[in-house]
Amino acid sequence: MYKIHLLLLDRTFEHDVFELIRAFYPGTEIRTSYEDAGGGTDGEWDLSFRVWREKDSCMIRYQSEEHSGVVSASVTEGQSSDALISCGGQAASGSEGEEGRPRRRSQEEHDLRKKNKDSLKYALYQVLVKLTGRTLPWGNLTGIRPAKLVMGMLEEGKKNTEIAAEMRERYLVSPQKTALAITIANREREILKNIDYENGYSLYIGIPFCPSICLYCSFSSYPLKQWKNRVDDYLDALCREIRAVSAMMKGRKLDTVYVGGGTPTTLEPDQLRRLLDEVGTFFGFDGLEEFTVEAGRPDSITRDKLLALKEYPVSRISVNPQTMNQETLDIIGRRHTVEETRQAFRLAREQGFDNINMDLIVGLPGEDITMVGKTLEEVRRLGPDSLTVHSLAVKRAARLNIFRDRYQEMTFENSEEIMNLAMRTAYEMGMGPYYLYRQKNMKGNFENVGYAGVDKAGIYNILIMEEKQPIIALGAGGSSKLLFDHGRRIERVENVKDVAGYIARIDEMIRRKQDGISAWLYNLGGVPFGCGK
Ligand code: SF4
Picture 1: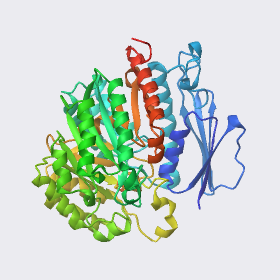
Picture 2 (picture 1 turned 60 degrees about the horizontal axis):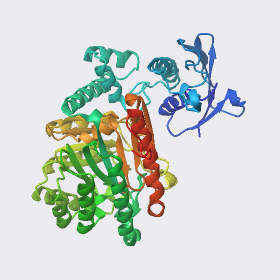
Picture 3 (picture 1 turned 180 degrees about the vertical axis):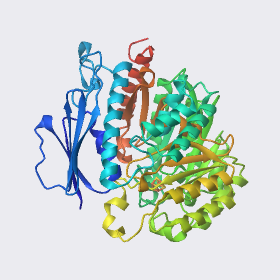
Picture 4 (picture 1 turned 90 degrees about the vertical axis):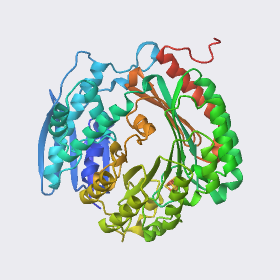
């Protein structure tokens, strides 16, 4: 295996440097060491990098059998002596402020840090292009939210043409991806313009059971068969969390609810009623902008469950085929048929659901463009209201990764051509792109894109992806995101992932939320809990 070594001064821009190198060399071993921790370049490496500071520049040395050289990136110093600004130095978020509290970065420090990070990545990208002879569709961007970057520029008052120039010249993004990100950010702004999202929040509720576990899955998901006897215990714990958190969020406007998982429709009709009753009683449904239930797996959807959902103001559901090729479904362990997908979709339409999303994955094992084309044609015939096209991302925890030797004979194909075919089909179905995100380890370094017809976009998807408001996540594996300092800082409150642990430790999960939400309210200038008022 090709081996890469990366020697950094310290951890300041470690993540960005590492991710950019990995984007050019997927699947290779990359070892990182730090000079401030006594690290060196010992060992045998096919390619090595050293990044260090020299006066007002950040230097990058690269060395392989065929190439070697040094490039520099300029570094801008700030006013504040301890604002971090270099490729060395201490990040402000890690330093201590008054009264021992961690000192937070000011806007100036934040901007300066970004400027220096961009400068370093720009120089490193040029080196990587030279070494590999390739460019990347998203240029030197390593973050998962390119549309958020564009949204930020729109909010600063920049014109689309100025943003396009910055995306191409500063971040080296391809013209096509630049156009995609700008189109999406503008549509997101249009969709959000009538929602007072800054004063609201959204709720995520996780149901971590599935009919079987898909090969690529890295979510908190448990096979229903083995956990059937614990589902009611899980709902008991979840209902306790719902009650407790509704009290913590009292007086705040709930904008969207998203029930996901896992597969929410593994719950029986009465279990669904119990859950949704609880949400309605304690949070209330009045004024909701959107209420999504990700039915998900077609093999879990029945008429009775859909009718149960219809008793509540569920406005959007998802029926997810991933692929309409039976042989792929069999390989990836979804254990349902293409026909079950067609039936589940028609059943949902018959019950009156007029906003149905379908999720697809491209780059699945053994699938080429012809097979993706077949899936898209089948989906077109069904006519969903929105379509989310994912590029396969094989995460560490996925069985596909754990047992990768078993699947090494298979091709995992994704290409610009496939992504374009999906986009063309979505356009022909009357949909346009409305949100986008990237993940680590995506096949072909592409992106996930949500397409939707007019008024059919998933508002929750935009709110969570653009980090516009707090998302309170309930259930096993729930990761709540709280926005501090007007969104400049995000803190997470995590629930444990395993179901048994969640049930047994529900009091602790509630306490974690109490602490997190209390700190968030304090930051907003509100009254935290437990002060007796
Ligand atoms: S349906 Fe989704 S959550 Fe369930 S196992 Fe498959 S990928 Fe995981």
